[in-house]
Amino acid sequence: MTAKQLTATRLEKYKDVLLKEKDETQNIINDINEIQKRGSKDGNGDLSAYSQHQADLGSDTDESERRVYILEKELENIKKINSALKRIYEKTYGICEICGSSIPANRLKIIPYAKLCIKCREADEQRKRRRK
Image (cartoon, rainbow, N blue to C red):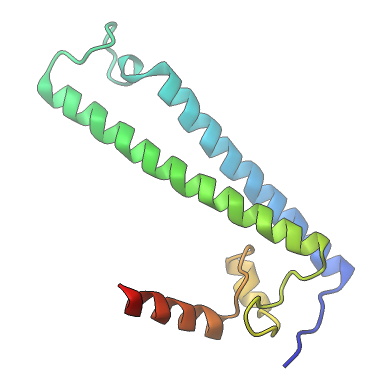
């Protein structure tokens, strides 16, 4: 089944959604980078760069690890958004990269950077689970 290409108006709407999401994601990345630059001394109110108590040190480490995890996830989102924007410019946005069918509008509304239809996404996830 071949996909019906989205109209220029619909592509522009999705582009706006993706650019807004990209800005929000970039703001999260910038905030995390600022916190990491300041270091743990600002995090718990200590004037020194070292925690005074083992519990504080553990909390600081846990917070730092959590920020790194979030940063990695947000950087991955930026890649997905950029890929979706590229598909908009190439006029292939909304078309499943595996089967060539149209990706339903309700899926694109929830996951605007989706590159697979639901059926192909489920099959892809099953293949990944079997490899583990």
